[in-house]
Image 1 (tube, one colour):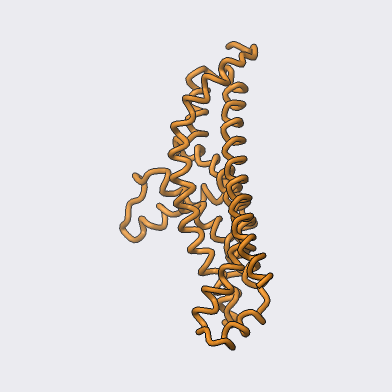
Image 2 (cartoon, helix red, strand yellow; image 1 turned 90 degrees about the vertical axis):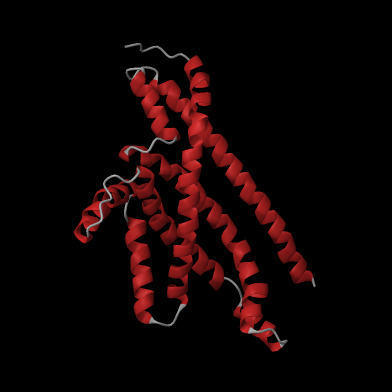
Length: 235
């Protein structure tokens, strides 16, 4: 087995890995979509006056945030088919992507519930009362006054949660998903574990660039929406 370091493997591996980002993006996109919806439901439960709903939502968030991603992934991958078979549903032939999306939807939902809750609570409730007093309906007050400001507050944390999801998503290869991380491991296995360092460096470069692009995108969004917020304050 070759043990010397050869930098050419870094640059040769990157073009081979990039096409598999499509799988990474699809899984992350679906997890963000469903996770955001779940997070919104949990946030509403936390902000509501029903103590049972509050306890369920807070308990769910605590359990999910305290469960390592790799443990949750295996629980879903082995547990969901075992439960489904009791109802006559066979999920053993489902794609690994299905279980990955479920896993990170549950985890992202727990994170987003706290992001949404804290963003909503950061808005001065006097603004809602003022909006209603000038003739806006409850729905109009929320959609035109409260939600836009809460969105700006939540944006940085949403971006950070997305970055965490992208990084945690690399664990999906452990159940056989061939995304960018899975392809890197296949290349290494095909090389009989030689030049693994160079290939992982190439993979790291892809993740670094991707993370920087996402971070810069959300920084620009934050600046754009913050301008509107500043203009609203000066009126």
